[in-house]
Length: 207
Image (cartoon, rainbow, N blue to C red; front, side, top):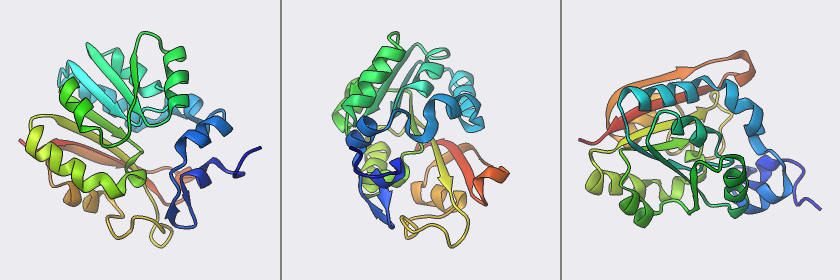
């Protein structure tokens, strides 16, 4: 029996972080409609293009879920590893894309990042769920991986709708200011179905 009716409630509910990702992946077959939506997400296409254009030989995707983006990245990079906190998600990703490498890992896994030494780190739609650890991650990248690119993608919401994380940032400009990197490119995508929200992205590094 499912604990909650909506998969979103396993993550953030009533303005508070729940963070029950493993239980969510056990209770729902396709949270966030990853299997279908991933094919048409414009910001993900931008991500793959940026990795290709910068010739990033090794890439780590944080919070890879079922590995759909990891698979797309594998077409343009020699080595890509998808990390996710959910063993169920990693098991399904490994079955779907056996040519890719996946590991169970909680954010921020500095030991894994040191071991993998990626040219680029990808964070796709996970930032709202790791806000409490975000400052540690930023300091780590600035100190130990200043040359490593970060591709960051995140949905933002129309004014007044956001209940969690608004003290950190609410739009692309505030996100970029918070990370404080040197940015190569950034942008945002708007569609009617986003209900006033925007899908944002940036690529930057500290060097």
